Image (cartoon, rainbow, N blue to C red):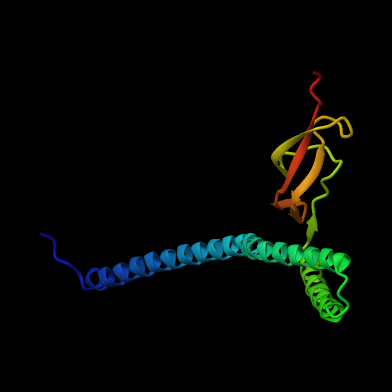
Length: 174
């Protein structure tokens, strides 16, 4: 066995400390790089998550809008058919209230990039229409949309909810 000099004995702990320091520094650099990659990924994903949340909220608002639209159409129909003059002021107030609500919905939808899908007279588009029936007619080209059962909506040119429609089929010759 060789005798260990004082210099060699003192250098061993210093070498071990330097190696441990280098190892810890390398770990720190890897953690820093991992964190930077994580931060960049979060920054990339954030807009998609916001769009997804906005889309979910708007999808949940559409049934409420449909009910209000239906109520508005019924009030208009009742007003046109009503002969009772005592009901007129109440109906007019209800109409104003519904129109104010529609105005707010319209502003909200427009601000979020929501638009109505045009349907009647347009060719069927499987990305934007859901067929619920067929109508025999020669007035609209085959496969064209004859009527709309439920409105459909786009958000930033992507389908938020497809329009429910009936399409034209040729009249059967007897």
